[in-house]
Length: 475
Image (cartoon, rainbow, N blue to C red; front, side, top):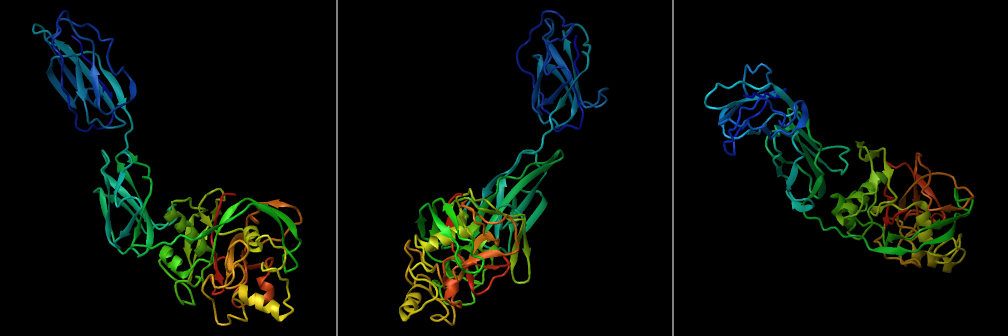
């Protein structure tokens, strides 16, 4: 008779043992070279079939399985098996099990085989699969229940909710959730939320699930009308402050929004309108800082199903404004972003070489020069009290409105001095203190409206002179 014992070391869960097959008596088995799994096996699944060589004279088999090498306590103690195998399930992960068997002939008392051992694999509950609300769902309530499919063996779950796709910060982070659902409340209207879940058991915690997102409220997001800007080379710079030396710049093709981002568009995407001149839906949004503009671009990209271009490690909530920490810009992404300084000046000039894109030079010398300024730009002498609706002035040669006047427009670049060498798709210095602004505003005189004029401000400052437009196109 043979006996086999397997050792898995850690307390096991439920085990089921069932024999199958028919009798195969012929001669008493004196050794079991064909055991499975082999003695000392590791990373064994928690549901397995133990098997051994048949004894020719056996009419039945018995088996014992324990986490104790002395079998003082049996995890399985089964008799009357009609075949040399036994199925086990519900074993604990990362556990050493011992097992042994004997063969009964009906004439002799059984003798246990030698003791065999194997170790089960480390089993952590699988990553949960998210269920509701569906990925990308809109029109959600400010109070809702997140749900996911139960993970096999999970004892609890962790849940995170964030307004950023990278979870740089969270509005909710819970652990020890015992049910595959979690109720959240006090969400903000017109806001995109991202959520993810992990599962935990005695062996550890799974990875986070892939993040899903939903939108609270029904947003009427109006994607901007984009204008195709052709690839080309131009002479960048001029005689304005910080605008020399003039140098050659080559750019690939990209698209640029036809107008400044409006208050209606900003409200639909961000859920708020920070504008001082809260005059109507077609007025440009202002009092936005550089970080606000970057977050808008990311959210607009999500709505459009495009790459998010800006990544960051956290959001710092200051007095009246938010700033982003460790911002990086992925120029290879296809999502919305702010233009580079070079892209702005190139698109503003629209193939012209004069100071103004309407073919005039600074300073205006005649009444005709002033009338041309009035027809093409909202500036100090025709808009002394604030902004004007977008697209009320003449477009430039490429169909872009308000590239001079109305609002200064944020660009991606940090401030840096120009060099005289030719450049291709420049993106400015890698670090700095001030982000660049272009185009002039309603409160500026004629020199600030020239195509080469440069302005700068610290990125956390949002004033009622500052707005933005978006571009897209890999660099």
